[in-house]
Every structure is written in structure tokens, then in C-alpha cells.
Image 1 (spheres, rainbow, N blue to C red):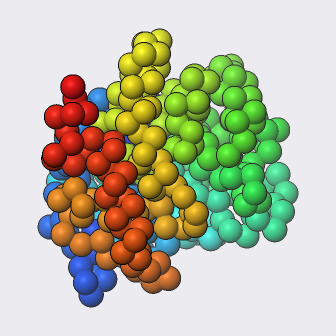
Image 2: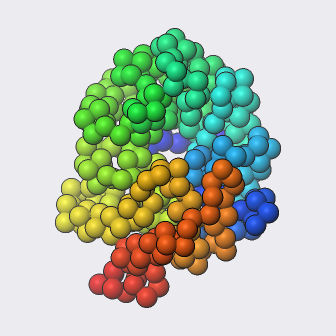
Length: 317
């Protein structure tokens, strides 16, 4: 059973997975990373076994170990959202049961890549229902960008909310501002509790202004404090403070989310090394080490955001 009841709202950083040079998990550095992120004032939970932690390259046993270490390190300090990255329902159910037994507080459900070929509504609903029937944990839908073919239609989302009570939130990465706002207005403000968590980190300010009840982002691994500042300012309708936070986030947006998108978390690891938080930015293939010029570009962005030691005083002024 889950350690704590969690409503799946607020600022939820997604943690990175430090690796050794031999590409095995660096547990000591991972524990430090967890402490760094979890120590950020104002966050509501953390996410593990997601894109930010390179879940696609992790075995089931490694995912289980990641969750075990997370629970051991954090205790009951914060709810833990565990990703369910699986290509079929039996594997998804296995991960969901492992996560519930291991102490997770919610599950982030990735879409099977098969759905990009054109999933029928019944397939989508059945996939979520099977997971919901296997666990008491609240579920978070992961809504992928429209261009991927893994973006659930609005009528399917409405049906899922009506038929599966344990769906509590959606991590919205649709990439379409109009569709995103429609989701916030129509589903979050619908007949039963449901939170839209933006992950539109490339336009986070604009997205939060639509009224999202939270955000779930890999960038939170590195700039959780800035995300909290922006989220709280928008919620308090303090646009001056929100713009100030957005101005500091802006350089990191371009550092992390430029093309190709597959390198976004690779870049965050490099930022962690630049900031002195991690000893290595090693990633598992097919990801590759970034070129020196791009690493310097990331360093410049961290400086402009006021995150380097020599720039923090200026940023706080």
C-alpha cells in the first residue's frame, strides 16, 4: 500500500539517474541527487522511473532498485510518483504492483508505443482499466505531444475519467496551447477532482497561467526552486514575481529543450556536473555524450539564470 495519500498536484520534479562510467547506477550520487531535489522548499512530490531517469534503458530490476533507494533515502518526507513504462498491459501491471508494494504514492502511466499506429478508444481505456484494477494507487495519465500519435483524444479522456475513478491527474505534454487550455478548462474544472500537470517546460509561464494545478517536469531535477517560484507567483496572481522567475528560467529552457529533444535530460545531467551537483554526466546508449560546444552553451545558460556560484548574488539582488 502507498505510504501517504497524495492528490497528484503541485510542483513535482522528475529525478535524473546518475551513472558510473561503466554505465551502472551510481547509487551514492543518486542518493545525493534525491536529497538535493527533495530539499527544495515548495515541491509536493518527486517522480522516479520516468524519462528523466532514462527508464527506457532500465531493466525491471533496476527500476525496482531505483524505487527502493528512493524510499530508503526519503522515508516519508515526500510522496513518490513512479513511472510505468511498458509496452503491454501485463508488464505495466507488474510494474504497478511492484511500485505499490515498494512504497510509491502514485503512478505515471506512459502510453505503449504501439498506440502511435492508431489505438481504438477501447484499447486505451482497457489499458488503463487493467492497471487500475491491479493497484489502489492514483494514476496520472501521460499525454504525449500531438505529433507523436500518442496523444489521447478529448472524448477518450472524458470516458477514462468517467469509467476509471483512480485516475487523478494528467501530465500534459500535448504541445498545442489551445488544446492544453481546453483540457484545463474542461477536464480540470469538470464534475470530479482531476488535476492537469503541465510539462510544457519550453513555455511554462504561459502554460501555468491557464490554471494548471501543478507541473511535472524533468527540468525540476535542476531548477525546482525556480519552478516553485513561478508556480507560486502565478497561483498568487503576482505577475511581477512570476515574470521575474520566468526570466531566470528562460535561459535554461533554451539550454535543455533545443533540438534534438532526445537530448533534453542528457543536457540536464551536464548542467548538474557544471553546477557541481553530480560527478558525471554519463548516459546509456543510444544517448551520447554532448559535444564540448553544447556543454559550454549549457554553462552559459546556467550563468544567465544565476545558478552558478559567481552569479547567485547577482540573481538574488
